[in-house]
Structures are given as structure tokens and as C-alpha cells.
Length: 311
Ligand SMILES: Nc1ncnc2c1ncn2[C@@H]1O[C@H](COP(=O)(O)OP(=O)(O)OP(=O)(O)O)[C@@H](O)[C@H]1O
Ligand SMILES: *[C@@H]1O[C@H](CO)[C@@H](O)[C@H](O)[C@H]1NC(C)=O
Ligand SMILES: [Mg+2]
Image (tube, rainbow, N blue to C red; front, side, top):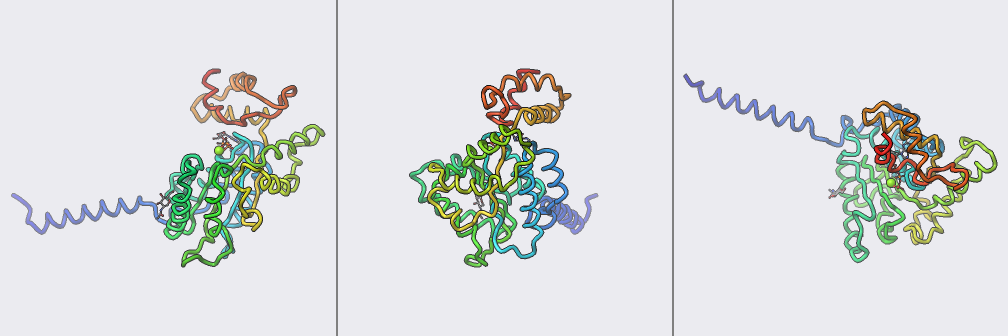
């Protein structure tokens, strides 16, 4: 015998409601469930996973924690990370995202723009100049606590950098949207020659790497970025107007950091970390100065791929 019609309808409605509920339950929205800063988590990650970057570690931890905990920030947080290849600029940005957004880098509120991938053609600059501010405005109006990471900032067209300047500033709001909860992180190699020189000088003078302080690098860093002719900063007033809150130097990694990266990588792949294997790989890498082989030319980049040849 068939069940009466009202029962069938009732069951259907119940199932539909349940499906709808579970769908929405999993849908990322701009609230505490999905965006919840884990201060201890960030601290632990930066202290244990990021190698050889005591200056950046300290600055980033202070800047991000202070900003997120502040009830009334006067402007969005703007960090500019500088360092040569493979020193951890993308990596540390990832650690920041992972400790704010439940969905980590996949979060709809985290936006990674890479100059050469997203804005490759000079001829299209006029389109990009309209598009990018529109994206920032659109996304911040959906979620004030949005994170924007700009990779290869030194390859961004100066006019494009100019187009985002208003969003980094001290405005209360722009057309009804407030940007004061947003975080902007710029990544570039600009200034890395200067950073490497300072670190090398410390080493030559026989001084400990850990004694290097932000003040040994910061002023010169903002100067050298400003004077770096090929960098997008050159024509803009990002620095002039003091829109960047912190210049964060990433130091060149040395031999022992490369070993640490190698061991971590092996563990990550489910292998037993083997120092001999990692050492064999490190011996084939390029280090500078040429004679003494102290600093890794490519930092920890490509290590994951290279390790295969030595296992
Ligand atoms: N300081 C570090 N501590 C731990 N791991 C690191 C560090 N630097 C780099 N790595 C490892 O090397 C990989 C490549 O580093 P990353 O992509 O962050 O370099 P980058 O500074 O962005 O370089 P590039 O200028 O070439 O973009 C990371 O995914 C990470 O696994
Ligand atoms: C948010 O940013 C993305 C790029 O990361 C863009 O594709 C999208 O259109 C933006 N959303 C809005 C509402 O502007
Ligand atoms: Mg990078």
C-alpha cells in the first residue's frame, strides 16, 4: 500500500531542507566560523616552520597580531616582503593565511595576484587599471577581512600600483566601503641585493646572523627599493606617502637552512628524513661567495624536485 500524499510531500520537504542546510553549513561565509585568527598557531608555525628568518619572523608576528587584535585600525595592514629567490616570501604569506582563514589559501577571501600571470600585457594596462580596483572593492565589500597578496610586485606596472593606492591609505571609507580590516602583502626581489650584502658583511665581520636587526636593513631597504629602477615602486608614491607599514627583509638562507628544508621535505613526502641524502643534494647546489659556499643561491627553492635524484 502506498503512503498518503501529505506524508510523501513531508518527507521530500524534510530531505530538501536537510540537503540545503548541509550545503550552506559547508559554504564559506565571512564570519567567525571561517575567519578566526589563531595567534598561537601563527607563532608556532613561524617559529618552527620558517627557517633562518628571525627578523621577518619577529616583524610579521608583531604586525599581524597587533593589527588583527586592534579594535580600530586606522588603515589596512600593508606589508612589503623583500628577499632573493627561495627565501620564503610566498611560504610565510601562506602561513599567515593558514592561521586566519579556515580554508587557508583556498579561502574565497584570500586573493593571490601574480604580476606576470594576472596582468601580463602592457597593452592591456587600461583594462587592468579598471579591473583590479573593482576586484578589491567588490571583495572587500563582501568581506572586510580580505587578504590580498601581490606576487612579483617589482614586475607590476607603476600605473597599476597607482590604481590600488587609495585602498592602502587612511581613508575612513571610499564610496561607503571601509578597507581598514583588509591585509595587503607585497612580495618582490627588489632590495635583495642590499639585504644579501648586509648579511654577507655580518658574516665577513664574524658577527652572528642572529644579531642582525630590522634597523640594520629597514631604512636602506626602503631607499634601495625606491631607487630600484626596474621595480614598479620606482614611479609611485607608495613609499613617499608611507602607505607601507612594514618593510620585511628575508635573509639569504645558508647551508644549515637548506638541510632543514630538505629534511622537512622528506618528512612531508612520508619518507624517513635522511641527513646523508639531503647533504648529498646540498653539496650539488650553488652557494655564494663561490669560495666559501655560505649562502644558498636559490634558497630552499626547487629542493623538493632535486631530492628525488639523491634518494
Ligand atoms: N625560510 C624558509 N623556511 C622554510 N622553508 C622555506 C623557506 N624559504 C623557502 N622555503 C621552502 O621553499 C619553497 C619555495 O619558497 P618560496 O616560494 O616561499 O620562495 P620565494 O621567496 O617566494 O621565492 P621567489 O622570489 O622565487 O618567488 C617553499 O614552499 C618552502 O617549502
Ligand atoms: C574578487 O576577486 C577575484 C579575483 O581574486 C575576482 O575574480 C572577483 O571578480 C572579485 N569579486 C568581486 C565581487 O569583485
Ligand atoms: Mg615567490
